[in-house]
Image (cartoon, rainbow, N blue to C red; front, top):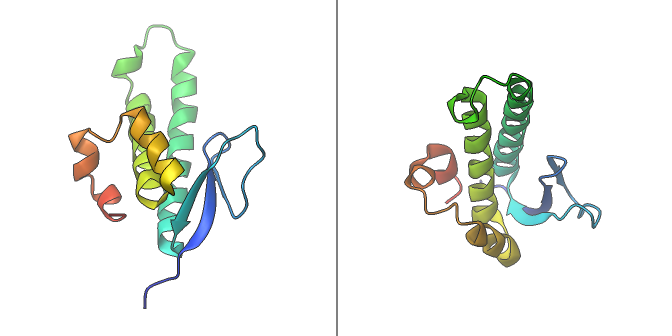
Length: 119
């Protein structure tokens, strides 16, 4: 039996997925997701936060270059996956925003198993 999709609002500033839109200062992406899809998205948001904290620590060390830091790569990858999922589950405004960002053309995103679950 397939789960019913419910409406959620993804606030990337706070990393929250809410059942109501966030305050106006933090624009939200409106998505329709099943419980399983919601769980996957929340897992990616958590991974993104963890990688962001690790890259913050690295940023305090001046001799480690950004492009050579694994934590930065994990953060970038998680964020790209989050936007790809928002594109797959989002309303027209969310999809248009992600298209305007220009990140969907990357082959890695199109071949990623985590993202393919949402197509």
